[in-house]
Image 1 (cartoon, rainbow, N blue to C red):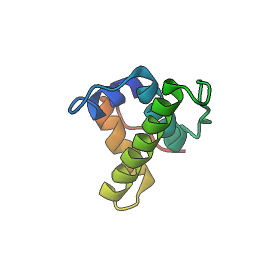
Image 2 (image 1 turned 90 degrees about the horizontal axis):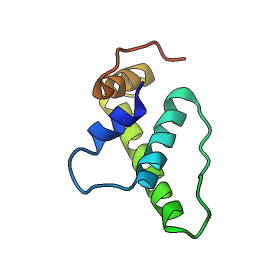
Image 3 (image 1 turned 90 degrees about the vertical axis):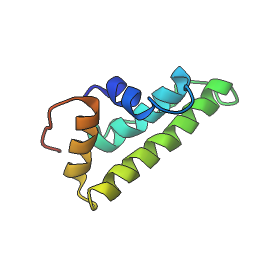
Image 4 (image 1 turned 45 degrees about the vertical axis):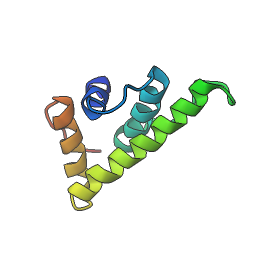
Length: 93
């Protein structure tokens, strides 16, 4: 899945977000889909660190919303996010 395209689609309306915010959101969605580790690339106490974790929260909310819309079906939630990203669906691990 192209996570940048997914972030573009999710964030296309509303206020513009920083690169750090987008990175944080993408990291959590990747974690939920691909089981990738989430580790902040910024030093604690910086504005980038704060933005990254605000993006993490948004990623958790987007994942939760996808699951709710899929009635708790993880594969359907992934397929929905893939569709938003413009990707063809793949079978979840």
